[in-house]
Image (cartoon, rainbow, N blue to C red):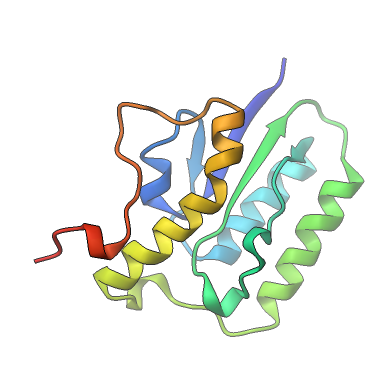
Length: 140
């Protein structure tokens, strides 16, 4: 039996999802967690660099995986290793240094990039609110 799982360092997105692993760390920490799942037989369903955003432009990374078996999927391994290599090659945004406004905006962008795939696999918890950009939040 397989399971669909979101691996993400975007807490605001994870609050809205039925099946996830929240990574309390950087985008590269999330990618390393994805690689660990791939080594255990996970298959990547969404590209780890989706959205064509450069690592220094997006501090959140979210990836959908299908946990199927204990067979190593070489295509998934290649995708995640390449993504980790790219993230290691540049200075990344530190989430803890972001203003509340920037945090909200980056979390919203990441969520929107994942929305269609999450809907496809029926992973959105309709009882939870979706991340919103800073302009729609009362940050006072």
